[in-house]
Length: 576
Image (tube, rainbow, N blue to C red):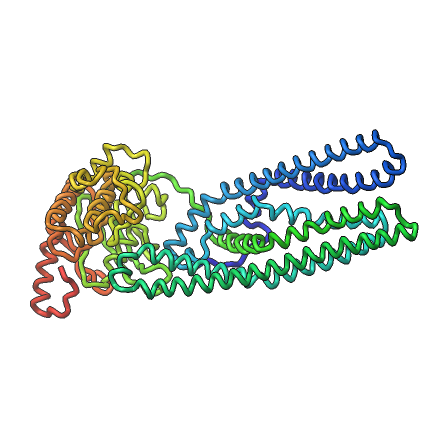
């Protein structure tokens, strides 16, 4: 869906970080101070060995101790401040990008759900934020300071600098090998984690079906196999990282011993003082510490780097969140022009060249055989699916001229499979608006004829429906979903098989609510498989293989269908 060609010069992530330029410069300045202050320990060691011990001056020793303690205090304070500033940069980056990334995640979930599940932009943003706020950036920022410490060692003696340089090159080579070997392993582990999570989510979401159809052992076996693969891959990666970490740590200790040996040889040759031995050991350890830390943080760095690349590619090639003027509420008509649509990610359309127009106060029934394109049509009209071609207009304004949330306030939608959000009945009817008034919530329930049903629940409107509405029956979910569709008196109400789970009383309440919406001037589209709900319609559309076969006043269309059914029953595409 989205190209992955990235403009490396002007990427949105770089622009977002550009807003934190002062903070980044401050972090760089703090890093410089921290690394310069690190010299305090080495200088203290040299002065104690070369000045205090020969002079045996307690006052000098005390003064040096006070100074080095002050240096350590400043160093600790600067490191805390740097960590806090990195956390602020991470939080600001996330805050500046989250609205747009959330918009793109929602768009991807509609247009390319599989890609959104595998490569969640929000998950990538959180990975980047977590890495920047952690210890990884500090280790990377300190890496260039290796050169500084190598120069200081060379000032003490050239052979100390050369020895440390050789050790640094070996450790850098180890870091490069770690990256090269780990990269594919980390990506494989990420893919396995996604598979494992999908299987676990499927088991949790479809527990009743799994139990009823005897699928438990099969799915548990599949989940177990996926978990074994993930565990095995994770163990291999951990063993690999541990191996590299141990080798690197051992090399550092060997290098420090070699530097001590070189320092001792220089002292024996009269080319350096005794204090140089200890100072060089401390300096070499500090010079190579960032390499060791970088190796420890490499897995997080690789993950953040991949997330950065994916998010950059998405943001560069995806449009900005459009800013649109707030249009007046529609009150007159819905017009569909040459609409072609189908499931996102599938080229073959399920509805083609659909054109019709309905005025306020119309109840349009949409009928046809299974797979005729009825649900595809209404999903596209409400914006759940993107249109491949054509326009949907409300009072003349195309749907893409509206902000989706603004337009959504004027649309009510009851899908075939009613989705409930974790929370109370009131929260679901109010479309997750915590500021919705009780009067509006109750009014929607009364219009839908579900007020008494809700009061019969434990806690009434405060009854917790559970994740996905699992604490409600299918009929209860459908009737509460109808109240949600009616909430706010929307101009367009789309009901996709709204009576599929209703008993006679529920169906009567549905018909009455549709008639009340017609009387106030709303447009109601009803996808119907059961004939009884058609009593509330004023017009009918017959779909056949994704195209309009008939359209007009209800009684006239039904008469034509009856005539056609008598003439050639096998060719009539409706079950109404």
